Image (cartoon, rainbow, N blue to C red; front, top):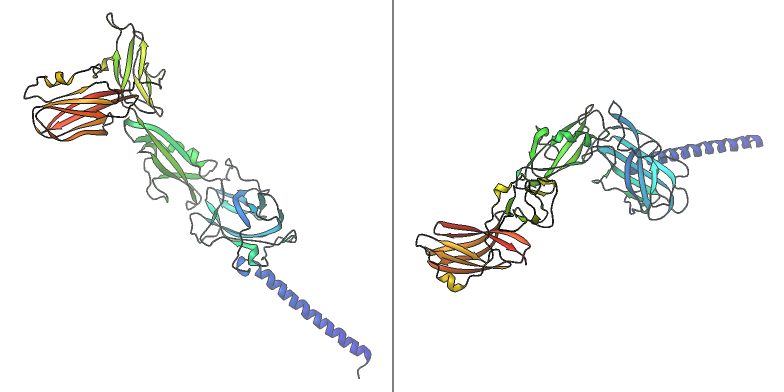
Length: 465
């Protein structure tokens, strides 16, 4: 038998060996656990909850203050910035772990600009809870970026899930985490290209095209960025470049400004610029009633075209505008200087008194017997409309020198067909047709009668009573 102290030493040795083995195993387990917690790939897969969600992501300073639109980029074109997230949760809790990659837009992209993995010992108990990653990263100014591969995990109740340690860790169960779908991303708000707009009147009266100086919008789309170049395109992604942006003729629509970093042209953002073209009104048609010795002591002006919703009218070359009526009464001699029409801020060329044309006859009543006895020569085809001006009904009397298939149609001043009064066989001699139109405040119309290669046109004036 060994002495007691020898046996004691054996026991002590055994304990030391056991303890060493235990420490070794513990260290291996702990090291393996740390290694397993480096990425979401080592965590419990198949997350089943979206309790904690990211509602906003933006570039910030170290205190989580969002970079303003006036942010000035360094001359190098690269800024040292931080990433801040705003979170919301259905259930108050303490501590949240987040893992994500930052990739450039557009996606898909295999480039990873930065990777973040951190556990935040923060109480999530507000409608919006803000967290800022402790590590900064280099952002190429103007580059559009997004969060991908997002993994969010949390614990239960009021226990601090992070326990004061900031390293990324795995949640215990799939019910305590959320993973962004692999084909999805969350855009990061950054001082990138700004949207813009431009509005012009059409180059020609009644037209739909205008000539824009897109280069005048460069400073707007650049915003606070520096060391960048703006190139203009008709499409997005940018393919068809606009070669003359200083004089770009186009209708209403959108163009795209590519704002690229001079230090790295592959880093760029796209600004959408909306172009709006308002049609320049045509020179107005007017009917003037002049004061005279035998007539009224004051005159009036009736704008006969263009008319419709949104038009304004001026009798003093645009100094003042009338938008309640196309007829302006009680005008003293010499009070009219020039006629203009305005719509959507676009002002027509001016007409003057010498261009007055009053083609509408005063309202009259003619009996059917009188019409039937009107004598018309064989070589002439005539169309008569009465009453003219009319309210909602008008009668047509066509005395045709031919017979055959014909038509009688009504058009507005824009040349658009309003109604077909008749289409079919026309007898030689007198033909009668009736037209009914909904009552309007004031409308200029044109009738057109076609038969055997002959055409007769005339004007109608519809005025409500």
